[in-house]
Image (cartoon, rainbow, N blue to C red; front, side, top):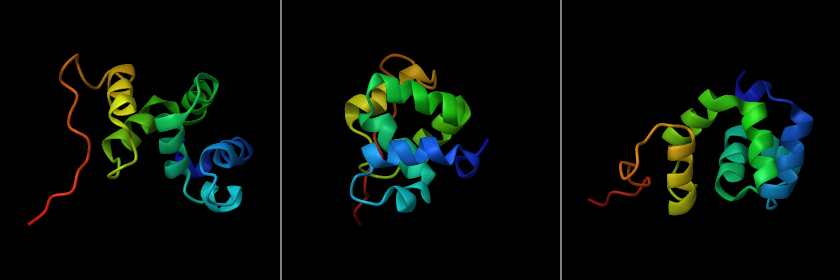
Length: 100
């Protein structure tokens, strides 16, 4: 399953809750953004919901392809550990800008 083929009703529900600055329809047009937002600030129930909807492979891809500012240090570490892609004390640095 890809983010584009996810259950649109569930995605719209999560978009309404976590991407409040856009309409649910507009937010659902960027499912990866909705998923990243739930991964970053979602409550336990919604994290379980997004894992069931998206699957581990997609969550891993979204984490690896994260944009600057999408994750807090806490959620960044949490997801690296939860998805088993980093060992303790081996979490990569958050995405950042490089000047010059």
